[in-house]
View: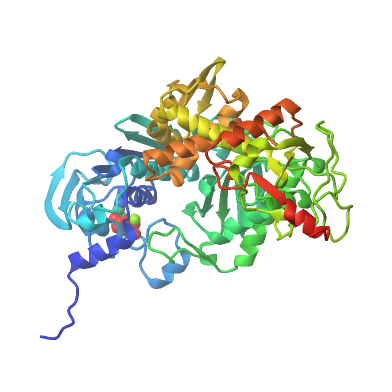
Length: 628
Ligand code: ADP
Ligand code: MG
């Protein structure tokens, strides 16, 4: 016998399952798409143990007759595609005829279905790809597919599944996406915990955003008015520039109502916010691009989250200019940071991981959809950037908030915003002996943001925000460890509406919230009431802090050990509670900061890894003045 054999159907299906079925959320996706393709107006999703033991999707769509119900599990059996030329104009969500056989090959599936014009319905049982049973049954029109024990027969795949909560949050996020894309349908999502999402048909995206994200968030979004450009149409909502997220979790892009993860569109969004948002920060965006099916290739990846555009530059420009146009129109020009400011902010290594700050942008209330306000927005007087060849700021015995850096180089057209980042011979980024910090003599404050101090070993410049962040971080972490978090009761509880995904994350973090001094109670539906917070935190920062923690835990926070989770929480609390930049500080406060910083375990870098202090070494100063 030759060595080449044609794979059996079952093996081929399992291989295909490797591409289509990654986790319970992918099962959910395929089943929901089938329901929508079947013209359903009601889609009900039930998950148990994060979808690992059950994903069940029921609909009131067209249903199947007995023959089709059995055929549906054959590989490449589809009612949606007849010839290869149809591929160029696909209007349905599914088309490969791969999903059901793939899913059925790695789980135990029960299909219940009845086409409207059939006398009775059909129940099909398939276990690990083997047809077990087919029966007639009295059923209402429509279809339900229950997928149990995913990967029960593929231990290697099962091992790659994450915790129930993680799997659940993937699935919940997915259902949320579909509910945003299909306004005319009702979606219900239930888990052991109860109803996580229930939306009724609406006619506008605005209403759906209200249903899913809550009323507050709408005030903080700008609507992209449909821009008809030749055959393309773009619509949706984006957040104002000051509402920022620390990750891409809040960017939802739909192409022909299909959720995609497309780098071209992501780039166009980033470009639209260029100079309005620091690098590393992301907006909330809910975008719908309608494009003729022949202009886009969705057949790039079996899971169909990637697309290829026939005319990428047209799509890029449409997305960029439509968002940019709205952002600029929505804001008075003077309220926008100038490009130079943004460059400085980046040059100084600040990022969105930082806390909210006072000032024209940061002082606004962050959107309720999980936004974090602009982090330290440094506003230097024009031309006062540090120069590569400039001497260190010569600072006298001043400690008032209005101290001007006398020795800073004058404005120059050659001013380089990245000067601080470059290798100035005078900046010694190496931590000097840490103990030295305690013996520093306070000289004053620079730009309301940096503490300048002198020591035997040179001149020190300390970032007041990150210094305080480090102090608070260690304090919060220590208190958590000993279960001694100081809490403060709010005068009035803060009520927040959570998205279904945030609600799942909230369950996961509840114990740590409590341990850090939060008292948060369910407040009906998807709202929670915050009654107490960590003592360090001022109430105005509570909302953005909670949303940031919930959103982070959905993406980056998976699989963290308890220790890592606690550090992350402590860092986030510290960041939100810390003194901001652009804030004049009284002398005593600066002294206090220096003393407390000297007492920390790690005074030289903030919990996010940024430097806290720069030192202009005495030796280097002497060298620069040719005295050595
Ligand atoms: P595809 O969606 O790519 O056609 P699937 O394997 O997902 O492939 O489904 C195979 C076929 O089963 C579909 O083409 C459709 O005819 C039928 N089908 C699947 N789910 C449903 C449903 N919920 N309602 C009606 N028909 C369905
Ligand atoms: Mg399908």
